[in-house]
Image (spheres, rainbow, N blue to C red):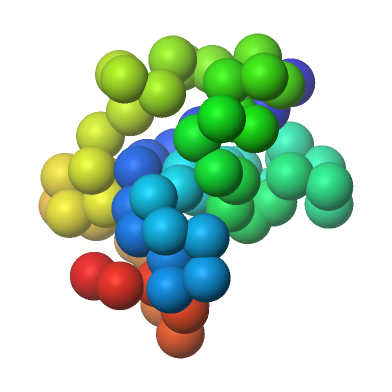
Length: 68
């Protein structure tokens, strides 16, 4: 199952979802929202927190392609 962590913005993909590594190498670490939805990602895209909200409570690794 694809497990979403938060919504973010990637320099290459644009709007995207950071997913948990347990989602597998085909999904992690980021997916375009349409792919996330098509793969049945949980929780629903619309319910995912923004990166800033997620980072307030969790350690978030830095990604040079991510715009924060």
